[in-house]
Amino acid sequence: MSLRIAYDGDLLEEIRRAVVDRYQRIPRGGMEMGGVLFGTRNGNDILVQSWEPIACEYAQGPVFELSEADQATLREQLARREHPSVIGWFRSRRQGEMRPKPEDVALHFRYFSDPSQFLLLLRPSLFGPTDAALFLADVSGTLQPEPAHQFQVEPAASAPPPARAPRPPLEMRERPAVELHERVSPPPAPLPAAPPPPEPTATRRLYWSGGATAVLLAALLVSAGFLVALFLKPSRAVLTLTVKEEDERRLRVQWDRFAAASGPAVYGTLDINDGGVTRSVTMTAEALEAGSAIYARLTDDVQFRLAVQRDGQTLAAATRYLGAGSARRLAPDAAKLEQQVQLLIRERDDLKARLEKLTERAIFAERQLEKLRNGGSTTAGAPAGNRD
Image (tube, rainbow, N blue to C red; front, side, top):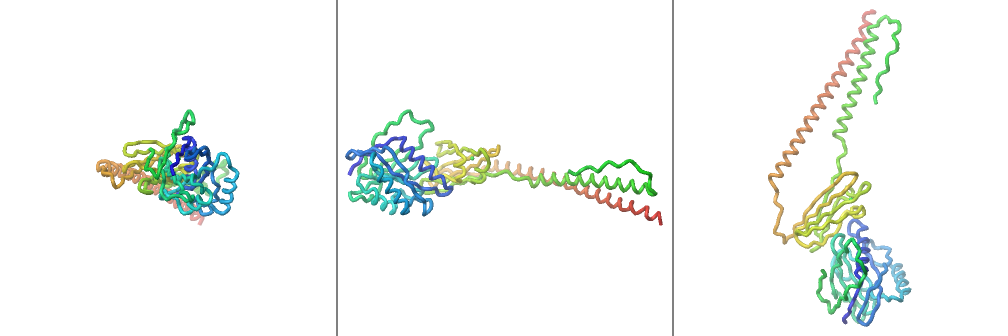
C-alpha cells in the first residue's frame, strides 16, 4: 500500500514545540505526550490539517501510557470529531529506539485500526532537530515494526514565515530510507567632680582603667569582625557543566541547576561548536531549571559553553566531547598550567601575610588588655594597705 502524506510546516512545528515543552518539564529524562491527528483523505492522498493532545494522567510516571480512565476520555474525543476525520496519531519517546512499544501497537489496533491511519513517533531534542518516524499498518490494522519513513524536524527560525503554505507531499513506499535534512557605646562622660574622697588618686585610676578597657574591647571586636568577614565570607556560586553520551548520536549536557537557576531574572546562553559548526541557544529560566538537555551531535568533537546571568554576576562553565572516531585529543598546555600554579601560589602567600598581620594585632590587643586588667587590680588594692 502506498500513501502520500502532506502536512503544513507550521503545524508540524507546533507539534514539535508541544513535544519539546512537555519533554523539558522534568529535569532528568523528560515527559512524553501523545495526540490525535486530523485531516482529509482522498484515496491514497492524506492531508494533515490539525491535532489535539491526548489526555494522560501519567499513572505510570512520565511515560505516555494510558490508563482505563485515559482510554475512556480518548474514546469520547474520537467520537465527537467527524470533520476533519481522524487520520492517525502521534506520541513522543524520551529515549531508546525509534520503534513502537507493544503498548503502542495495542493502542493503535484498538483505536486507529483503519489501514490508512498511521503513527508518527517523535524523539525530541532541546537544541537540535527532533527525530521523527512514520509507521503504517497492514490490512488488519496492525502496526508494522519497521518505519515506512524517517526524517528530522528542524526547529523553525524565530521569525514566522510570511504564509502558511503546505509542503510538497512525501511519497512513501515500503520503508524508503530517506533523511531530511539562567555598637559598643562609648563610656559615659564623667559627672562634675565632687569633693575628693579620702583616696582621690585611687578613684581616678580606677575610672581611667575602666574606660581604657572598654576602648580595647571595642578594638578587639572590630578586629574579630574583620577576620570573620575575611575568612567566612560566602563563596561565590560555581557553575559546573558536563556532557555524556545518551546513545550513539545524542549527547546529554548537564549543569548544576541550583547554581544556574536560583535568583531573580535568570537567563543564559549555551554556545555549541560542533566540529566547526557553531550555534548559540538562549536559555530561559525554565530551561536552566531543567538541569540538562539533549543535543544531537553532527561530529565526534563538540564543545559546549554555558554562561548564566544571575544576581548581577555572570557564571560560566565549559566542557568538551571527543568521540571514539575523533583524531584530535586535548593536550595540556604546560606553560599555561605553570602560570596558573604560580598565580595560585602568589595568592596563597598574600593571604598568609595578611593573616599573620591580623593575628599579630589581635595578640597585641590581648596583651594590652591583660596588662590593663592587672594594673587596675594592683592600683585598687594599694589604698587599702595604706589604711592599715
